Amino acid sequence: MTEQELEKLVADKLSEACQATEHPKKFFITENGRGVVDGGDLYNAVLQDVLQVVQKAMTDILKETVLKK
Image 1 (cartoon, rainbow, N blue to C red):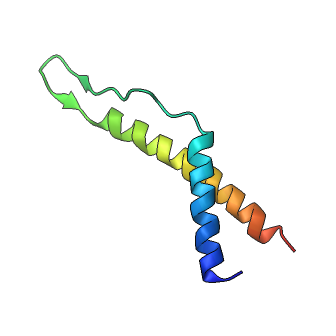
Image 2 (tube, rainbow, N blue to C red):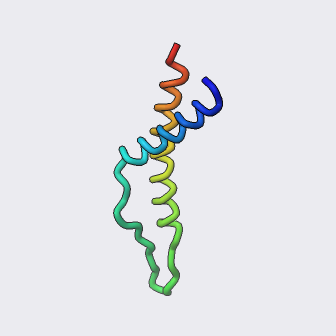
Image 3 (cartoon, rainbow, N blue to C red):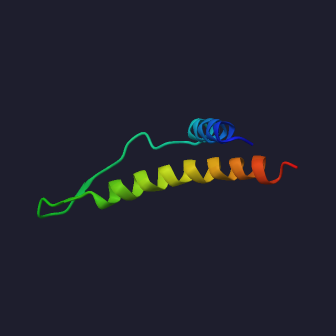
């Protein structure tokens, strides 16, 4: 597999994984009683969403490259 084929495979699988996963419609930022906004919840929600897409894409990429003989 050439470098260009691998790059195309990765791009295609990331695109497929992004379309195949359910993404949150809204991300909430919470505010405590003192008016301090907590961006940690937002960050964790976005991080979790991105990691799910990457995990699915990498699993498919590895299946296609390693298990292909």
